[in-house]
Image (cartoon, rainbow, N blue to C red; front, side, top):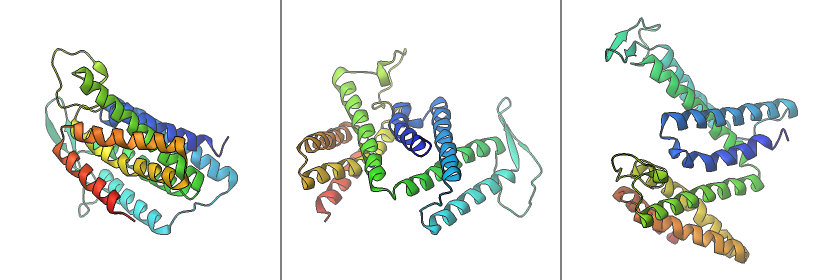
Length: 250
């Protein structure tokens, strides 16, 4: 339980995150941060209890440490605070005058908390991916999340929805897709999940798995239709390039 609980919780987070407005609202950011914090906390407990070393490249640890040290240094050395009531930046004394600094200490601290969780999650994924079974489960979770978002977006287009989840508001939001209020964010997400989903379909064909072949072929087709149904031209261009790369790949 100690070993597998953070792993299953992370897979659940992968599926949950795009459904909570893709982590693009203040509330969804907080929820995803709490989930990732729980995953990482349980993972650290598992490492301590089992006295297990990380199975990742040292260069990843060095890069992650460099990013976080620089970010927190800039935050710690902030030179101003934003006053929302008066709409002005209030200067504060820099701790290191020669070092780079942030213009808003509060926003930088909030962002760095999120960045720390995301960078730590990369290390968690790198360690988890050393096990083929869990690497496959990560791909499956990504495929489920992407296919479900694509299906929701297509249902919205078919039924003439005016807001995500068929919400009611006194105005229409024409640029949304699925759970994303901005269609370009949805297009970026769909393009990110397309290669792993297509890879699962290719794996099913290579191994002669008829049920999985039907499932992942349908999922890949749904993603392609959703990408080109989305009104984001950049997302459509990237989807075309991704499809060509997959078709021309080895």
